[in-house]
Image (cartoon, rainbow, N blue to C red):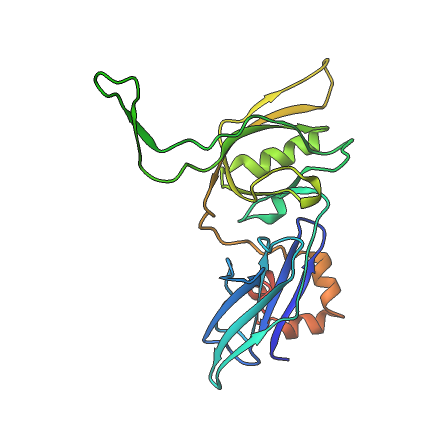
Length: 265
């Protein structure tokens, strides 16, 4: 049925899968997201040339009503569809990789015992953009500003409790893509929701030999969203849940490439 279907993605960072169904091959499609009265173009756009295209939105705002609209053009004309309202939330803080969301990790928890969690955050700064000019014969300089203050910059110390946590955090940071870091409002972390570039990482090993804990010091600076495309997390459990049998599966996809991309006929 033509329209938009929004389904929560389970088993990872809070996100939704947005399926746009044009009932016929779509020659053009624009997907938008509205939250708190603000409408933006969705960061990942559905594909054309198919009747149904699904994208994943890992940037959906938390704890607020969100709707999606899709303006779809097919051989039959142009139609705009609107989804039902959806809301996602989290009790944990997440560091989300925008290109490979399967690498995302919980970076803090309300009452941590194991896993990854923040030990401390150093003083954050927002540097001025200005020049200082000394005036001959006056103790007072002239400060000339050259724009708004720079984005927030600081560092945090993150604890990992075992080798698997350490490997997961290293994998998240390895390709140096800016990471979306979010803390739920209930944590009252005083954190600016957004993308952060992580600088030179240092790792300390506390305690005695054999202690699996590691303390990662992560220097960060807030940046704009990187220009990347999300790789769809279309896994085997989702596949078997979506189709009753092999015949239904083969009828839904044109070829193996379409199957792995979750692009249905």
